[in-house]
Amino acid sequence: MNYAEIKNLDIANGPGLRVSLFVSGCTHHCKGCFNPESWNFNYGQPFTEATQEHLLELLENEHIRGLSLLGGEPFEPANQAELLPFLRKVRARFPKKDIWCYSGYDFEKDMLTGNLGAWEITEEMLSYIDVLVDGEFKLELKNPNLRFRGSENQRVILVQESLKADGIVQWDDGEGLSI
Image 1 (tube, rainbow, N blue to C red):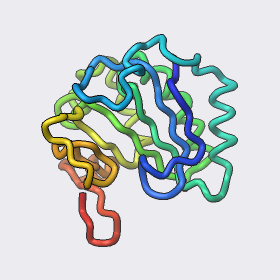
Image 2 (image 1 turned 180 degrees about the vertical axis):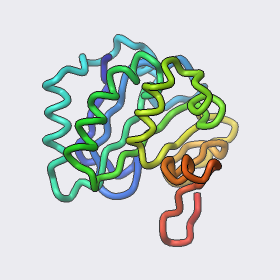
Image 3 (image 1 turned 90 degrees about the vertical axis):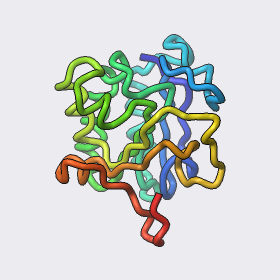
Image 4 (image 1 turned 45 degrees about the vertical axis):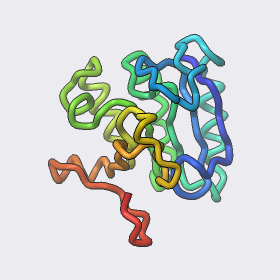
């Protein structure tokens, strides 16, 4: 797997200061995508052990609230296989930091049905993710006033709560601004 970019102090892709990893490779090809160069699976740099260690070092900063995974598409089957061992390390080393993931795939239709390849990998990957922003970006539904999402069809889902409830539980920012 390759990655397009690492942001060590990101405030746009989840609450608080975050470390964000933009993976390469996406088959959605959304019209108006803000990162179309990352569609190419070969774009960017290889996601090596050294890259993973660098990300873990960035996450050690006490001011960093968590990790955000973006793309490209983190849930592309080829990317899941590479991200899963890294997510194990993040969760083991930083159990109190949250993990957000942005995906063009739909939580119920794609992820929970096993449509993304090996269900065991998708299921374990979901077990480490706290918040999922799901759904393809739709240019005709673009709304710059939305928090942590680009178009009105996208949802900000509390993954663990949704799995327990057997239904979608959406994130609330604590200020009464449910999104």
